Length: 345
Image 1 (cartoon, rainbow, N blue to C red):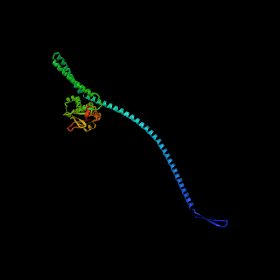
Image 2 (cartoon, helix red, strand yellow):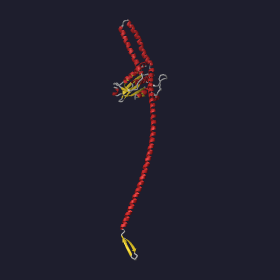
Image 3 (cartoon, rainbow, N blue to C red):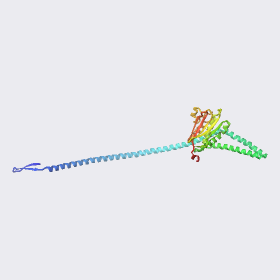
C-alpha cells in the first residue's frame, strides 16, 4: 500500500492510497523477462563463440589434412620411385644370378664330363688290352677260315666264322658300353634300375678285376630295385668308387670288392666296400674336397670323389664314407627310392 499526501490551496490535505501489487508483479515479470533475455543472449554468445571455435578447428583440421595429403603424395611418389629403383635393381640382380647359375650348370656338366674322360683315361690300358685280345683272335681265326675254305672243310670254316661273329659282338658290346659311358648326361631324374647300373659300371672295370686278381661279390635283394637318379651319372659315381677301391687295395694281401644293396621305405642304399687300409681321420676330413688325393703324383687328380659327391647331391641323395669294422673302407650312396608310379613313367 502506498500513501500520497496532497495539499490544496485552501489548506486541505488529501491522502491518496494505491495498491502496488500489480506494479510489483509487472516489475518482477519485466525483471524475469530481462533475465531470460540476458540468458538467451549469453547462450547465443557462447553458442556463436563455440561455433566459431569449431569452424576454426575444422578449418585447421582441413588444412592439416590437406598438408598431410600433400606430404603423403610426395612420400608415395618418393617411395614409388625407390621401389621402382629397387625393382629394377632386383631384376638386374636376378638376371645376373640366372646367368651365373646357367654358367655354373654348364661348368658342372663339363666338370662331370671331364671326370668321366679322366676315368676312361685311367682305364685305357685295360680297355686297350680288352680290345687287342679279340682283335688278335679275329686276325688268326680269319686266316684260318681262308685256309679251311681252300681245303674244303666247310663245317670247320662255318664254326670258325661263328666264333668270329661272337668275338665281334663282344667287341661291339665293349665299344658300345664305352660310348654310352662317355656321352654327356642329362640332368633329369628318372626311375633307374640299380642292379642294371651296378652291372654296367662293373663292365668297365671287369678286366682290371681279373688282372689284379680281385674277388668280387654282389648282394642284391630278390626283387629289382629302382631309385630316382640319372643312369649314366650313377654309373659314373659307381665306376669312380670301384676304381678308388681297386687303387686302395694295391698293397693289400686280401683283395675283395663287395657291393651290396639294401632298401628302406624311402631310400636305396648302395654299399661299396674294399679290403684296403681304410680311411684315416685326416683323410675323412678332406675326402670330398676337390683336388684332394692320397694317390701318388700323376695317378689321380683328386676330382673323382668330389664329382661323385656333387652328382649324388644333385640326385637329392648323400654319399658318405666310413671304415668297415673288419678293416677297409665302405662308401655308401643313399638315393630316394622310386615309387610304383615313378617306375612306370
